[in-house]
Image (cartoon, rainbow, N blue to C red; front, side, top):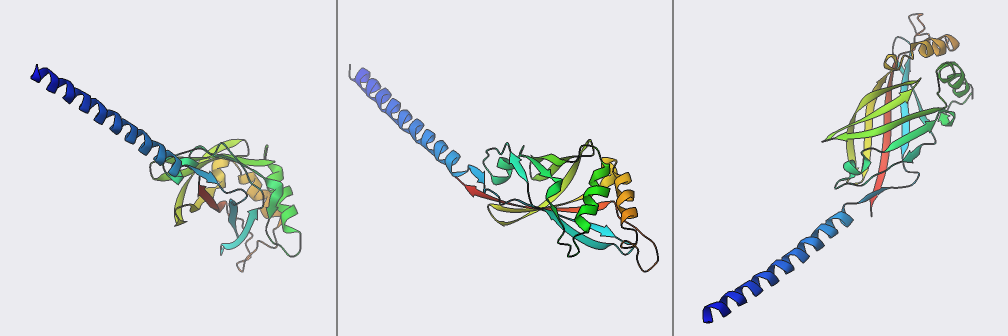
Length: 209
């Protein structure tokens, strides 16, 4: 009889211990999910680029002042939360800080204007392990740009990549803008050149929920 009582008491204690542990586990998991959820700080994302002219590869910088973000997700890390994020950039928001006010209209007309469906540059941010990239849709084509990234802190990211316009069948647009800006893109060697390589840069700020 004593043995039966001891067995019953042991089972009761074991069941109580298991329930307590299950509750602790559930609480811990819940705390982790809340702690590691991230959101995008509204209007914090910045997108800029550097194009190049002349044989000497003189840089010409610019930015887009508007970017629409959707489908921002959740994840255990900030990078995981960004995976699958979609973006669209109105090309009309182009700004190159040109004092003459002539450069931006030329780019819109003679570069973007000769492409297909280029009111928007759209894409998807992708994360695979520790590697990041963006699928970019431009001129009716979607291609991938690998990205290098660095962090200012746990929630502020800087991304850099290189866009080769021939991958988007956009060499006609490169030739078009080069012709429109022939004199300005002529270097000391007398050659007018616009490079098909464009450096892309983005800054993203997140916050923990």
